[in-house]
Image (tube, rainbow, N blue to C red; front, side, top):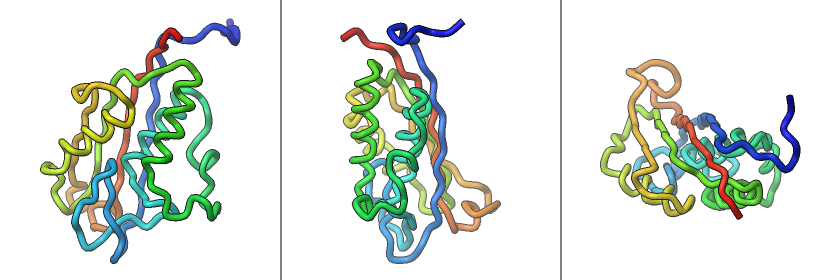
Length: 169
């Protein structure tokens, strides 16, 4: 049984993760928040792993490919791009498909610095960008207990699970 083109699922779930190496003299950007730290993401764009994981989770829920398809890392037009612009583009695609974010859960893995003081602003930024209630956005952070690239302080990672709901136009 297949869905006709005019039949839309009531709900769609997406999940994704993003990881970037950390390097000196780069900004550490997480959900649009600059976190003061001597190291930041090494990436073609600004490297915001939270916005990247969120954007790709939305694309996945809608079966619209991945970030590399929409924003190739060899495109000079996207070099050092603010990842909020990526999220805004993906949000438009979501709306064109007839969906809205219902709620989401994000987990950030970073050995240092501690993020608890920055999480309220991150949650606000995500709720603002997606036009959903603040309490529909969960963001948590933890370390990797010294294991792997994240645990060794060489990388930052974020994962996201999101539920989209169909909206009547």
